[in-house]
Image 1 (cartoon, each protein chain N blue to C red):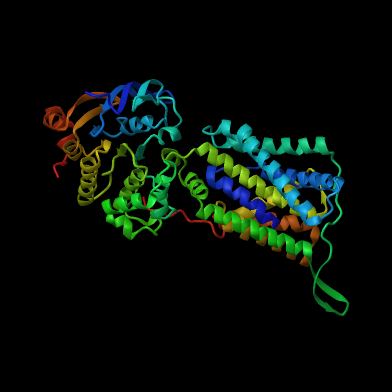
Image 2 (cartoon, chains in turn yellow, brown; image 1 turned 45 degrees about the vertical axis):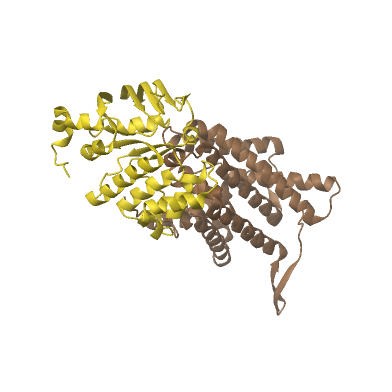
Amino acid sequence: MTAPLLSLSGVSTYYGAIQALKNVDLQVHEGEIVTLIGANGAGKSTLMMTVCGNPRARAGQIIYDGRDITHEPTHLIMRRQIAQAPEGRRIFGRMTVYENLLMGAETSGQTNVPALLDQVCDLFPRLRERLTQRGGTLSGGEQQMLAIGRALMARPRLLLLDEPSLGLAPLVVRQIFGAIRTLNKETGLTVLLVEQNAYQALRLAHRGYVLVNGAITMAGTGVELLARPEIRAAYLEGGHYT
Amino acid sequence: MIYGLIAVGYTMVYGIIGMINFAHGDIFMVGAFLSLIALLALAGLGITSIPIALALTLLFAAGLAALYGWTVERVAYRPLRGSFRLAPLISAIGMSIVLQNFVQVSQGARVKPMTALIPGGWELMNQDGFTVQLSWMQIAIVATTLIVLTIFTWLVTKTPLGRTMRACEQDLKMAGLLGIDTDRTISLTFVIGAALAAVAGLLFLLYYGVIDFFIGFLAGVKAFTAAVLGGIGSLPGAVLGGLLIGLIEVFWSAYFSVEYKDVAAFAILILVLIFRPTGILGRAEVEKV
């Protein structure tokens, strides 16, 4: 097997004196969808943000594309074709949808912005209708599409998605997960997906990791993890069978 | 109008890092002194053409003041980013005092006079021996302010740099995640704000003809009032606030008493803070989550 695109080894992250990640090992290979599931406060988002260098890992090493990025400034990491649609979407509410999308392409040196914009709008037709609207006026699902679209504008090799299904109607969740699958199949986009919606995430992903209290407790393919009784008990027996 | 130019600097910095830059008024004062030095030097060099001298002075003062702005941010605010909210505020007050005393020591405490460079004016009305005159200087101030603000508005709304600045203003962390060098953007904001303050300093020098090391304090607080009145964080609000504060002062002086014109301005500040803390054009934070 070739070297992974992203690899974390022994990563620990702290908020002040509180340890949020404990000695985490995780690999994402090119072309894979990898999901990270876990309960509230398990450290899923922290892991995502640690890859981006904010907060910074206090111990361990993060290798991306053969390069050690553990100590690089955030904005330089994000210029290496890594893009994140973060928790809570964080779109710019007082900018138009169009400007939000432009921000995604701004720093990655894209030369053909109109073509990229077209691709994103083909993927999420709702965005095309609302290009001139302010981001803050969009519905939750549209905002999530915008957050993903903005990340895609950087033409990432690695897309980090933090809880894209949070607070959305099942139909919209299906749309968004469908878009992720399409992107992965057609363009070979590598995706690291953080989810609480474990059932759908594990069905979508090639492999998965389970994070409990900041430590990885289980790893395996999506199908394997779905079949594990302890996973079913902890994450699936709560009406997530949609 | 001059207040408007200074107020824009307050509003920009507040918008982007949520902090009142108390040293901003003193950058304005430094700008006025730099203008005076440049004008005297140019006169010494034998450049007598007033438009050329003014243009050179503008560049010199704006450039050096921008350097001051950058230094202040670098020395006094950046190391404190991420610490508790009051820390940079206190540091800003310290910086303000440092600048005042620096100018006092290096330039002396006496009031510096300057002869009027643009005399004369445009007579609007002449009746029974009373004339209503609009001086060229007043016209120049209005024109300069409008030009500078137009360029500046274009910069913020239409260019990539402006988009970057607005992105940092709305969500600094997300801006970083999009590959924006947030530290650099914040520095640039200070630089632009300081350059605008220097333009205001030059106009102040030309209009009033006297400056001392203490003008920054009062002008700074007034401009701050203007920014709050217009709605802090809003650029058009800063300009509008500047105009209103100017008008309020003039009318107060005319109808009541000149001695208490500062009272009028600060009474406005208090009233605005009590009854409409978001200012005239301030945004009510209604956003879908």
